Length: 440
Ligand code: URA
Ligand code: CA
Image (tube, rainbow, N blue to C red; front, side):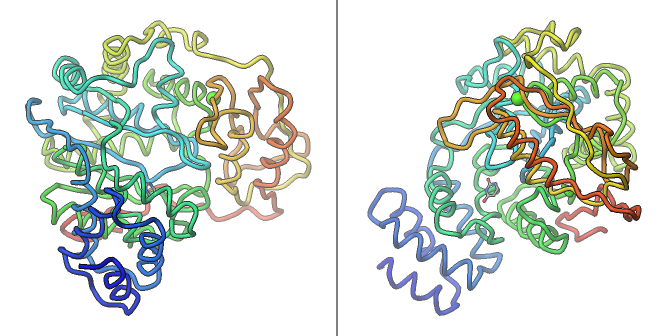
C-alpha cells in the first residue's frame, strides 16, 4: 500500500477501505507517512467527505493509536459527558457531581482551553491544591471511593488526534464533520466509558455555527458511537451567547458552586440539569427523561451534588473550604465596569469574541505554553433580549494586568450588538439525537 494512492482515491471521491485507513493512521503516527501527505488527505476529506462506515473506521484506528482506558474495575455503567466547546460553559463542574450523587459513576478525562473556548482542567486548577494529574490507579480508586473523578487526559491517549489536530489547525482543515466527529469520538472511545452524552454546541461561540450542521455532526457522532458499541446521546444546545454569566476560570468555578448551592437560576442551571438527566437515562438509572430531571433537581436542591463535588475536591488534594466561602478562590486586583454606549435591546452577541476578550485579560492561552491567570475574566450582566440604557453595566471585568484591558474591553463591546427592536429569543435546547433517531 502507498500513501499517495490513498490520497488519490479520496481526491477522486471514492470511499477508503478499513485497511487503507488503518495503514494511513499507523504510518502517520509512526512517522513513515509525512505531514504533507497527511495534510493532503485531510484536505481531500474536507472536500469529498467520508461516509459513516469510513468515519467509524477512522475513529477506531485513531482510538487504537495509543493507550486505551479500562474502566472495568469500576462497578456499574460508567457514563461520560463531552461538550464540543463553548464560552461560559461550566456544565461539567455541575453535571458530573449531580450524576455521581444519583449513583452513576463518572470517570472523566477533560481537556484544557482550546482557542476561544474554556477547558474544565484549567477551571479545576484554580481550586487551591487540586490535582488534575492522577495515576490510573488513583483515578480508578477515586471513582470507586467517591463515585466521581475528573482528571487530565493521559499523554498517550489518542496520539493520532494530537498530531492530526495540530496539522488541521494550520492547514485550514478543522471544520469538517468527519474530522471533528472522529477527533472527538476517538478520545471518548479510548477513555473507556460505556455511555456518553455529547453536548453539541451551536451558534456564534461554537465550532458549528448553524443548527443544521450541528445536527449533522451530532448524527455522525451517535452513529460512530453506536457502531463502536457505546450508548450515545447527543443534545444540541445554544451557544449564540455564553451559557453562564461568568467567563474565566475561578469565576466559572464560583458560578458552578453557586448553582450547586441552589442559589442560581438561569440557562446554566437549566442545561446542566437537562444534561444530567440525559446521562442518568443513558446509564439506565431512570426510565424517562422526566424522571431523570426530577432526580437531578433533587440532587441539586438537597445539596447532595455540592457534597459530591466536595468529596472529589478533597480526594484530589484541593481545599474544600472554597465551597463554603467562594472568596477563597483566586481573585483579581480590580473590577472595572464596561458600560453600554447606546440604548436599546441586546440583539446579538458574538460569543467567540467574548471568549477572546476573557483570553486577552489573561484567562486563556494565545500560545501553547502561555500561563493563565485563574482570577481574571468577566461576568456578563445582560443577556440577549435584555433592555439596556446608555451607561448601564454590560459586564464586570476582573483585571490583574492593565495592559490587556483596553483591547479586551474593545473586543467585548464589538461583540455586543444593541438594536432598537427586541429580538426573538432562540431555544436553549434544540433537540437530541440518539440511535433511535432525531428528536426536535
Ligand atoms: N474538539 C475536538 O476535540 N476536536 C475537534 O476536531 C473539534 C473540537
Ligand atoms: Ca480566570
